[in-house]
Image 1 (cartoon, one colour):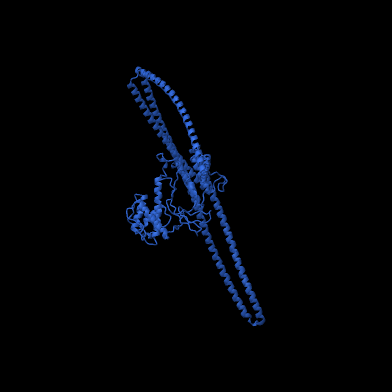
Image 2 (cartoon, rainbow, N blue to C red):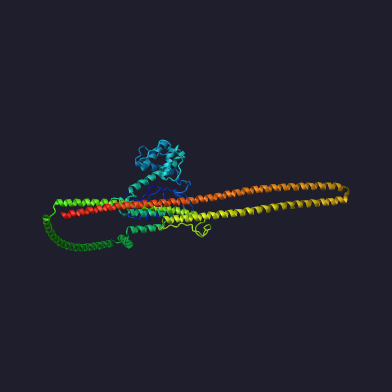
Length: 632
């Protein structure tokens, strides 16, 4: 496929009309962007909002777009699938595509008006095999497989399972046709990218230009990603990105701005001159002849200058020929000297003491020594690699220990034990500091010190809890006693007020009765006595109720005390288990680090001894070889 072609794969109109395409393809050879297929809705004259393939957005440029790559919002298909003209256009495109790709069955525009489910599955399988040649349509659950494949390919709209049962129905075929057209455009883009070899253009045969390499691909992909991010944020124009992209392209192709400006000025001047001459030629034939004369004179001057250039070039060639002749003569003298040197070396070779067999034996021993040296070098490299692996393992163990130490410090900060000025630190330092100079004794001393401080802290916490508990109990007893006294006094006061009120009423009634009926004193005395007995009975009942309330309050107090003791024991047990776990983990980590250190020392010592033995053997072989050479 011609890389200079800038035609769009889809015949639908662009979503945003702009002049950005001239900036994107401002290189000697244009490239087509790749990604998911953009099938926008044709713009309406009366509509003020534009619907994007990637979702709807608000009219404000500052609001971000909703992308199909994130979110669970169900998107509405912006294509006019219920428009008959649009459906017929899609059917024609599909029919042309199937004919172009060699669809095995007979397919026409009429048969695609309302195809059966079997025909749709054949079309879908044929198109998808262009992307994945190994694909085979399953025989069962096709209504689930086709929507799943479209979703995996990135189809942004939902295709229901029920539409697979009646594909050719008037209410389901437009949606299914839209999905097939989307798949068709995706296959076109896939074929285009496969022909262009966008990902591996730098492995070409060397006939392509620089934009086929990695540099242009990286530059173009960065530009595409940046503009797409701005597009998703609501922008529709990318003047700054275009300018930056054009500047980077000029730096990549080493474009001379001054030369371009001069060429543009020269082209403008020549265009003006040609336009002027054309206008003049239309008005005056004499001027045309004069112009031709001027052109001929100009051509004559060019020929003369070309002749002078040829003469100067001839002179330069003669000078080069003379120089080459001198070099040839010098080379001849050098050949004679080399021949003399060759004869001298042959004489030395004929008179030398070593025979060819000795030389061959020396060369063989040299090769043996070289092989020994290579094997020893490989052994040394393996030992260094093993030591490097052990160092990496030791570093990982150190990292694990640091992580556990960070967890310990985090737990201590939660318990307000770090730093020294913390609430529960009591002036003690519970922080464990790491240092490469620390050894086993230092770690044991640090652990012992922290354990002692923690035990002391636990003892202090227990004492403080017991003291606060005693104080709480005493305060609760005082509060209960005061509340009981208050309730008793309030009841007494209420009863006294009631008695006073009743006595006042009775007294008033009695005074009235005395004024009118003195003969009823005896009856009134009996009623007063009865009323007194009733009051005594009520006081007795109130006292009994107060005693029962006191017993209930005492029982509730004992229950609260028992729950408080249980919670205190639970807190103490949890704190002890946490500290025990941290101490055990520290001891395990220390033991593991010590074992790893011993293991690394042992392996290093063994490798060093083996290297010393190999070096000693090599020295013995060299000494024996030197002795043999000296003896010969």
